[in-house]
Length: 79
Length: 402
Image 1: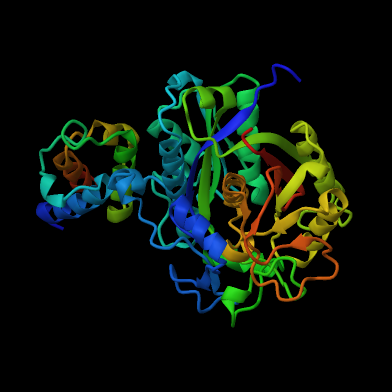
Image 2 (image 1 turned 135 degrees about the horizontal axis):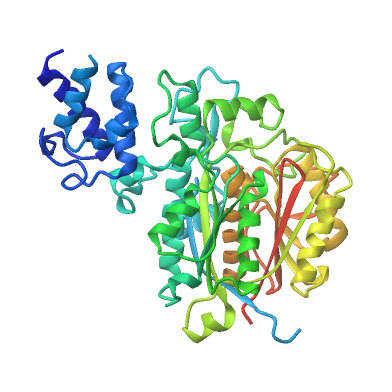
């Protein structure tokens, strides 16, 4: 799966979690500051990412993610 | 007697099969239109009982954002909307947030979330626990309305809603709060719960005529019709309500709660627990059985409940006209007692009791005055009963605002 395909998948997941239009989620948008994600949203994103890409995300690593690009990097690193 | 705190019902809110607002709810009850129908929310064709009373056209869009809605089970959504309506209906009470309380009742909590997750292909999301926990509605109501005092949840199956309102009364009486939002919610019309109630013999089998299936006190009754919904009341001290010029629907004058300690699902056939409950509620209200002018019965339509309850009513308040609104709206489990409390408050406010439908031939074992058409009542005590699986009993007594 290409970098962009991973991003598109994650963007769709994230839009559902945050109940926002996928178009507002850019690679570098700050999930917490700009998209108003709270701890529960971040936990949902981590779990949904694990399920979608069949990987295990270390909780501390997941907490450090600020943008969707950070999550793309996590998925790529695990793959 | 002096110095006793009297409590007023000043706000009502509902989401029920009979309507998503109090006015529609009340007119549907008075018209006696059954709300039972084939289930529309999922494919129930494979189930032995495929009908229920569901909340039509429920749209929480004006109350919660999409993101908030994702975090709520349907039970919580119903509760949040009904509670918000009750608070708006009560008008501005100007009670400090620290002096506000909320008590919610539910029998099965976030059932839709639990069922779809456990039977679904993927595991739980991060929202699973906060969506299924029984206290979710109390949490959201407290956040939405800045309720910083007690926020509690009672779970006593079919009596949850009655107990929640009764415990709310006690919070006011004991000085724990100056304003209480109390009620119940349930969204349990799901494949598993339907089949489970069917398998324990509680549901009506009248699949060819859903609208005639819920027939409390009728000789041909064969079980209850599953329902969903939510109802909330706003309670405050009567003198506060009068001082601020609030509309008082009724006084919530008494509360009884007892246990059968008899059987997991069947009532004590002597009705001893139920009778003690009613007596306790009337005594709490400083009223006597002779003061009862209307009974809003638990009246589930199961063969056993109705005989037991009718005997208790006949022994204590045989003079009073009786109604079971479950004939119209089915049995909403943990919400039922709260929905019936709202109907009881309206009955006193309007001095008009709604009818029991499908009463074609009253069971001769139920020797009480069950009313078939709306009937004017004298101002007096209105008794609302809730009896639950587990032998949990709750009775509320409403009195005219005088």
